[in-house]
View 1: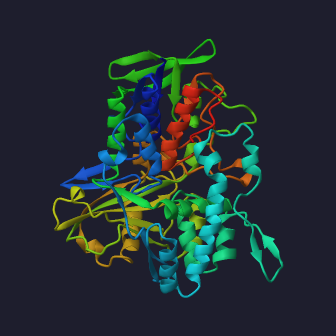
View 2: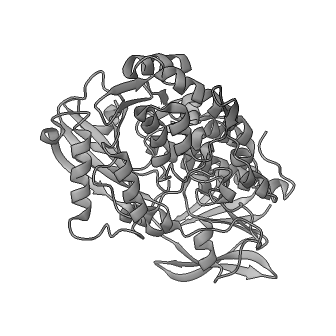
View 3: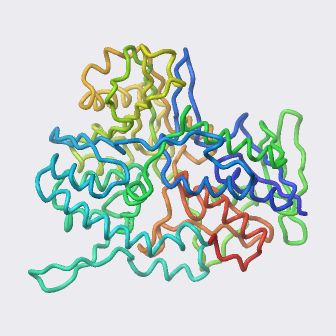
Length: 506
């Protein structure tokens, strides 16, 4: 039985902690804030509640597996999972709307044909078939297995299939997501639908590899799910599963360094209300690889031929606007509405300059959940937009956050006229809040790992060159997103329990 110190109480860290405790190890989690969950947070005021992190869950099987492997109670015995339908309503630049059924290819094809015209649904349906082929090729190496030592194999070839062109009597392989849209979808509204899944993670479709097609495919194939009571409930039950497995949590304690002894990680240097201290351990499960470099005093944690950590602040962040509304929620309202920018090119160019878009794409979440509103005469709503992180844009400048929030509300009114008149108050949260809650540089949000593109979208491996030190969470393999965080915990636990020969979940 080993003593294992875990840095941070994010979703990936807690997933690893629970699995390691079940394997018989003594696990202690050290979290610098006063709560658990990382980015999966809730803001509450006046009887209103708002999810300020992920609003929906894709691939719930990841967390079902966590609960199966760590106790007798399955996930559904701890929380109520609701498959939202439609999966999303889309309001496009020209005012066209389409509501897409959840996890139904035939339903989505029919809905797009009706909304966008005959043939649109067929093109999207054909794309989903190719996206499934991409998923089948990349699922294990990018989600279920430790990063291959010969990761170059993943980086060299684009797994998105080549598309035949009858007139040209040849096939053409898209290299970027933008090329997939331009060559295969051809309708600007379908292109916006495709690219919105990349933009949600701050990925530029012009540089994101074509295999980013797996992002919309994951939602289509496995559905989009809501946790009754708010997504924060998922974090709560994972935390409680850790407690049930005797994981120790110490909140309000910041890790300032990693102890080394005889060339191995040997514990943590800590700073808390009671002053500096140390926590000895046999193994350490760390936070993002970029920050681990500082905690190990600049030690090179990855071999020269390995994937290197990139500055977290270079990745985008999110602005979240929590709206407390008077008036009942419409009975037929979609849980999620995506309001696409009227000027997609301008939005992408703003990202490139490190500026927030003047007219951003906005995601509107309207959960039908009595737990998040004071009564049925009110409604809680969350607006989200992808923006540059605090490392690239000064979100603390006077008026910057409020001005951008005004633009988000104006965008949302395209989908829900009269929204501003219903607002009792709002809370605006920027990458500054994300940095304080998660520790990520600039309040950035990590994207999932992707293949091809010379490895530039891969994340560093979960094992490091310092024996006994592992990394977990969205900044290491397999990247960001709730499913990926859960899988990172499974991978780290496997590497520790089974050793370097661990080949991934079965």
